[in-house]
Image (cartoon, rainbow, N blue to C red; front, top):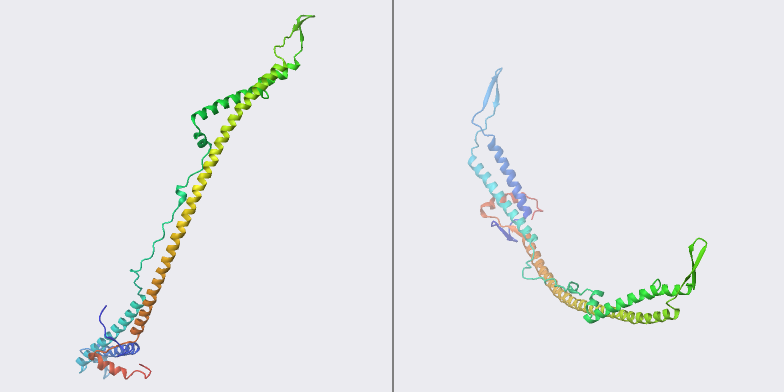
Length: 312
């Protein structure tokens, strides 16, 4: 920034400086008009006995040096005044656009929250449950399942034994077969099963079926219980992890909130102090005047007398 002649409470106000600058410009323009029309000769022509001027004579004024120096002095004074007017405007603009220095105030970092869902265990299925059985248990289950299935298939509805039992009461003692036309011969039917025998077999096999089916159901129930118990454990572990994460995250958030509140208070304090200083500086600059350099004082004094009494 260029140096200036602004001082507090001494010299020209900006309104005075602007008015004097305008008057300097007007006076310099008048002098320029005088010098612009200067020429080296005049021209006349005689018409019907009368001399007519074609080019008027405008010789250099006798005080041309004084006029030229006066013009230069007026422009110099105007430049001096405008330079200081701009300097004041620039100072005000600079102060008004300034911002407080917050470089020493460090904002707290956002907490690194815990996300337990990333490591949470998934529920298990029956495949997991079967994998928990001993080899001997798996083999026993396979055996019991096969026994129950095949025995049940034999004795249940549509099974072989059921068919035999249903057929037995309907078997006749004798049938007739046509050997040749008009001649029938008896066919002897000999039953090699009786109802009590088939019932006994059914009861025996039914008992076997129940025995093996109970073992099959035992292992199925055991697997389901293992799965249920494991999923309950997993649910508890996940819930505990979630609760612990929420507790930790709440503590992190609480700590952050306290730190951020303190940060905001500090920033607010810095801004308030900065604004106080800024307003004082603006007031100081607004009250500055132009301390007229002695070389321009004569011209300034000359024009000040022409300003209205309302001028400062």
